[in-house]
Image 1 (tube, one colour):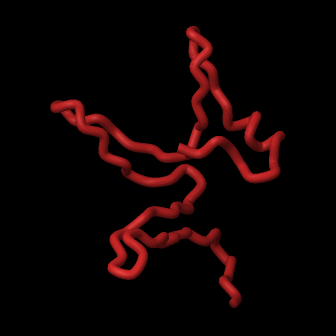
Image 2: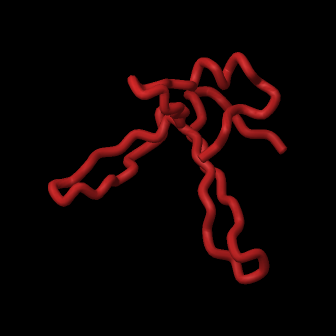
Length: 77
């Protein structure tokens, strides 16, 4: 779980949500569903981008990013 957006307090505040017991949550944009057995399956990202950890022999775990571009958008490097 992240604490918020790095050096972006306004954006962090927009993502925060508190329940009735004042427990703090961050809306991550992950969307999913629970099956009949109570297991959560993540289906997609609301913002069309995701970064996940995958096993790595060299590092133990490494990050892989995925993004869906808007129509007409391009990636440059």
